Image (cartoon, rainbow, N blue to C red; front, side, top):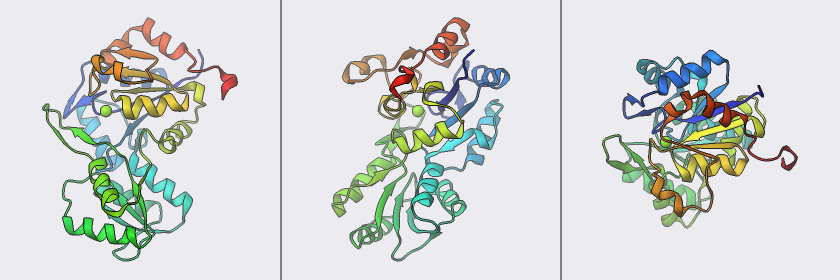
Length: 272
Ligand SMILES: [Mg+2]
């Protein structure tokens, strides 16, 4: 069997709210038992990988902190690679702040190198005003992701990081650079973390505009699950399409379908 590994979105793919999606625990624990590498990819920067891991363990997933890759981790590592020991003014929460500290960044209130926007539920308009002034004085505007909204698991939505970023962009006239899915920055970092080639990487996600767009553009094999935000009727609106469509990850417990997914090279190797 050819070596393959999985990048797996979480919300809408393996759980909804605090409930695992039926079949997801068996699927993930099965990957572990088969020795197939996987990494969870999330555009939520609010929590640390340890917090996320705790939640997953409680649901029955046999995973570790190191199996989780957040857009906060991607953002912190990306910025550290561009400017060592830089400074940042952050509108966001613990997950993002922790990763920036880990990457050698200082959080400051004045003349930062970067203004970084992440997910958060406690945003004050004063901090938004402060950020706008910093951006207009030359601080670079970075977004952990541009998700316009986030499903809350009860059929309701809340404003996502992208909505706040749009406000800052509009007010300052400066476009943000976003690191999270579908940005190739995060997609490539995740692939490299698993030490996979493009051809060996399979992405499973529930959102066309982030998971499938990002992974498809990179040349990964893409699997869209209809257990989350994208519905079958939405597919007609997109110029790109996933390689496989499943109702939920439970379908991948079927050995025949699973072999098809891991057997299929996304693009001819010569192209990459
Ligand atoms: Mg999702």
